[in-house]
Each structure stands twice: as C-alpha cells, then as structure tokens.
Length: 308
Length: 246
Image (cartoon, rainbow over all chains, first blue to last red; front, side, top):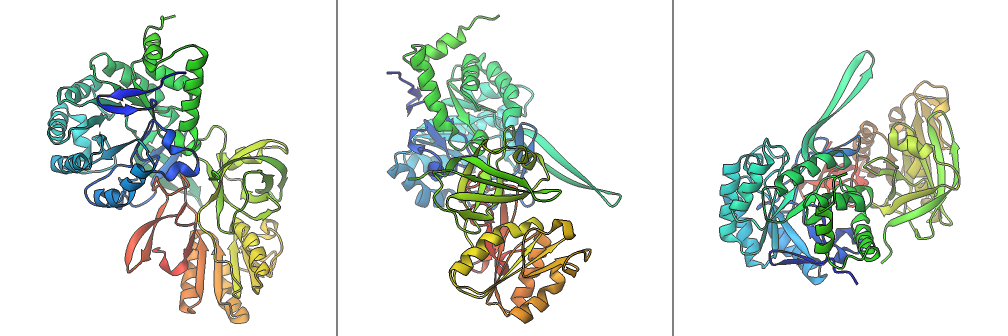
C-alpha cells in the first residue's frame, strides 16, 4: 500500500494531482469524463466579486504544442459560486481550492474573508492573469505590490493560502520570495506565458489577419515551467505546486525532481479529459512497483538524482 | 454513470470528393446520440480535440462527414479501417424532434447533421424538405429535395439564400432548421423571423473543453430580455435563430 497523501500547511490532499483553474469548471463538471472525487484537489475557475462576461472576439487559438487563451475571467461571481457550486463540492466530497481574482487589493481581501467565513480550506490567488487590462497583471510582476497584496489577504484568511505566480517576470526569485515573506503557505507556478497567435489568409490578392493575444499553455511551456520551478525552489522553503505542460507521469517526476511538492494538470484536461485520474493511478502503480511507500520518499529520491 | 469518453474502431473511411471524407466507427460504450449533438475526436499530436456533427447513428455505428481543411482533419483522413479512434460523446444539445413540417437548409459541409435530423424527423412522421447549397457540382454531398450551386453546374444557379423566399412559399414550413456558415445562418434566421417561422440553427466555433467550462466558445444570445453569453459547445450547438446576437 502506498501513501500518496500530502499536506500543504493544514490543507490535506489524498494525492498530489490537482486540476488547474479554468480547465476543470467550478465543481463536478468533469464527472462526465472521470471520477472527480479521486482528484487530489480541483482548483475552481477564477472567481471575482461580481460575475464577469469575459472578452469579446476569438478566445482560443491552438498553437504548435499548446494553445493561447484570452477568456478574460468570465465567471459566475462569488455569490453564485456559494449558492450553486459550493454545495455540490461539499455534498460530493470533492477536495477543492478556490481560485480568486480581482482588480484591487480590496477585492481579494473581500473574497478571502468570504472564503474564510465559509470555511473554504484553501484559496489560490490569481495575481498573474495576463488577460485583464486593469489591475491583475501588476500584482504578480512587482515584488512590492505582490507582497502587499498577499499580506493583506493573509490577514483576512486563516486557511491554506496559495499564490499562483506569473512567468512573465524578470526575476522569479524576487516574486517567489515576496509571496513567502508575506506568509503564503504555498506557491503554484506557472500561470500562462504571454503569447500571440497570428493567422493569415490570402484572398483575392489581399492579406487578411486574425490575431489572438493571451496566455500560452500546454506542452509548449513545460521547459519554461521547469526552469521557473527550479529557480524558485532554490530560494523559498514553502511548498511549490508546479504546472505547465504536464501530460505524463514522466513530466510529473521531472517537476518533482526540481522541487515540486504537487502538480497541476491544466490544458491536458482538454486533450484527455480523464487524464488527471489516469495520472494518479500511474503514479500509484509506479510507486508500488519501485517500493516507494510515501510521496516524501519518492520526492527525496528524485531530488537526490545524480547528474549524468 | 456512463462516461462520455469512448474508444471506437474505424469500420469505413471513404473520400467522397476532393475535400470531403466520410468516416464510420462504433464504440460499445456509446449507446445514443441525437441530431444536433456532436462528438469531439482526439487527434494525435494536437492539443485540442476536433468537434464534428453526426451525419448518422445507426445500430451503434456513427457516421461523420468532414471537410479536410487543417491539421485535425488531415490526421483523421489519414486513419485506416481497423484503427482505433478516441472521442467524447454525446456533447451539446439537440435539434427539436417532433412531427412538425420542417424545412432543412444546409450549405456546404453543414448539410452533415441535417441528414441524421431528416431521418429522425421522418421517423416521427414529420413532412420534411431538405435543401442545400454548394459551390459547384463536384461539392454536392448526397441527395436533396432542392440544390443550388454558386456556379450553376448542378441544380439551380446561385446561393441557397437566393431561394429562401421561394422555398418557404412553396413548402410552407412550420419550422426551418439550418446548419451552414455563419453568414448564411444569419440570413436564414432573419428571413425565418420575418415570416414568423420557428428557426433552429447549429453554430460552429473553435472549442477546447466541449462541456461549457472553459468559456472559449461563447456567443451572445438574447434570453429573458437581456444579452448573455452562451457556449456553443454545451448550451449549443443548436440555438434559436432569433436569440442569437450577430
């Protein structure tokens, strides 16, 4: 029997496979494809104070080995979440992390207070959404504004506070330290990488152009994520939840080897909607086969891997 | 609960014309799918699954007609009889199936779901009329009650939109149903509205999740007196012509 469980501060997970915000709905929507209760934790779609309609125009664009999205944080808002989605999560025993976003510190604080009041055990701060013009982007790219934001949220929230970092920064170390110094319990990284897709058509002697500028995700960003996690792991002590292009068990082991404590599956949920559940089984079988009884054992062994 | 992911085996794949293929496959886990609903196929090496309407579902065998125009359809057209195929189904909502007198209008590859719908409507005892428009004779897919081609090489000459008024006058439908490029759907919706005829249209958009959660494929619709977002993948692909905000 292998033990895949872990704790992020007081937040308990049965296994280290988490599904990423925006790729898995608010609650049990993926039950049409797999058994959602088995997922380590589901990160909800980013929730704001008020409902949001999101961006106009084309929102997704497939790229080589990935995709770009510019959804613009369309969501039902916190009140509808509490009324309609939270009961499903609770009734079905789905472990979850509430992802919150805002355009001012007060928005985050208010959302954190609501989460606290409703005994939501873990929240993830979206400080790095590259889609929203006002506010959002600035917290994640500047260590001082990030520190201020995380500190204020910390004061209002007693559960597990996770800060999701943007890769669109000059110094990953600086922002990771800012989150840790502000008393975050964990870091998740990376959010999407800023990118743009261009599609050209040539019709009747004229070029026609479609562009979609937003966040790049999927296999294409895995090396960016590995580098980011490797760098921040060297400077912070709090656990890191890694994400970026994870599709296979080997991907997960690679992230563990650079210091990740858990992982999130994002874009891969679109390609293979039952992948999170399959990866849990594969991880368990791998550990069984190679006689790792706990996640710590496996992760320590990976961190000790010899350089060839 | 039966999950929506299936693995099928390809029973037939045929090239119908220069660009269009027909593919047939079945999976023991897929029990039913209704006209309007779609499937989304995993294409090796690509991030996003590709959505396809269903041209027929008979004795557990799915038939899909598709036009080869990108990497996804290139992958699928390269599959062989006996190959396995991973897909999600059934996804999306359905056309209304009853015995109302229905005029079905397709354009190009948009005719695909109308074949299945036509069959089901007839089973309900509905009188139907299947009309379609294509670019040229070589593009015509199957048998119709009325065909127009842009170049006049088959059937009547011109766009199918040029014949809407005549078709409505001659057939006097209770409902119009269409699947076609967006510009054609817009015209059909507006003509149907002017005649106060119910109209259902199947929309298309680039999709990611297929179940309404990623919000990648939203369009605007007017419901309950206000404009709101609806996902083509889950709230659609079938919408009332009059509710779509163009």
